[in-house]
Length: 610
Image (cartoon, rainbow, N blue to C red; front, side, top):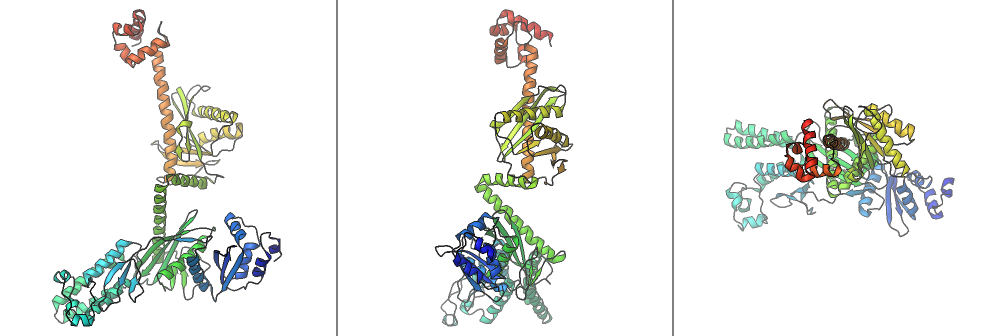
């Protein structure tokens, strides 16, 4: 414990608490000088866990900040790790400590209620009233809930009115039947047309459906249907057959695995920088009875394992799950009484885990899209972080430059540089280059000339160097750029090659020396960004090349005519727009612009050059 004494920001008071902590499982709470709980944690060994906060220098700035704020420590000893998990979850929800993960759950999802009445009603609600009613849910996927309610409505003609259907009121004939009775959606318990016993049998079957026990109800209907058929009650048997077919149709749509898999919880997790997304599925008789994805706002660099443990406790408590098997994607240092944790590698349980993973990944994508609509710059940051991660760069590539050459058999050779800042084109920084030192069609030499000119000037003027250079080409282009950047200019700028296929579309992203193909999937936002940069530099280079070629063609037709200088050439082109139109014009029309003598020279020269 000598290290604790050396820690400058740990008072004698805190040292006394830490040294006397018990070594069993429990909960610890950190309080600031105002007496506010700022962090709640659980531990198998309280003394060892709390001691770890004060005995070393933490890499995480968030953890260092937390430790600096601690003015008091409280703890609660419990019997087991499972008790610690439950208590931690409840305390976090109660106090919402500043440095704990925060469950982002501002939505109120609907549930299905079976009311606590003499003739119960079944309806959807967002309010949970503790009056003895039974609630099933909540349902995060509302269409699934509505499909279940619609099935119950078709199977059982239950009442939907709000009348106080007590035996006394019914006996006193206080009510009259409504339209629902006349259209056969209700059997009229309000006037004694349906017995309480029959009504409650239907409620019992509906309750089984809401629990997910569709096979149990289906089997019971089949047995009753056979009995009625044997008694020659074919009309009643037909009605039961219709109910049976409705349930079987619903089962076919909702059952995802064998009905042998019963009463199982499935959890999966995805994370990004500050958020954890956790998906929960509850399986009953092969059907998904509950499905929910929720978010934790990460505060203290918690691991996936820690976050998933919190999620498991939260969801099982919320949904009152007593499943004895929990399917998870990786091993957890977690024990729960009578519960088995399974990490499936194949089979139907693996199918359930894959389904959960698919849902949590889709939820994460949807949330990112929503956030990016509200804050478009967030998408740019995400793309730059993806590039940084793929290339293992020291910093985000906020400033990217890309080069391309353009020529026809070496004539009118030009090059272009486009600049993207924060994943957006910065057109004011685009640059055009005439190739000066290269004769003939030599793309490698042209690229070296342009890169050398570009970055030599930036170095001389102490300008801004890019975080990343893209070359419109493969390994060869990357190597010639590297020779200039590293060998000549002694700069350390990462270089990426964008190779094209025989259809002239970007097909490979290359990085490193020797260059290796990066596994960036085509069609992803990151691949589209790199492809867009490449298309943009190609467009810019081609446009510049066409402009130069067009000017050179005009120059060859007018520049060598005796008596035609820049002013007369400009006047002719301004009036006639092109050399072809000057050829077609009469001597008198040309003379009106530049005079009769010069007009004759133009007509003669252009006639000879046809």
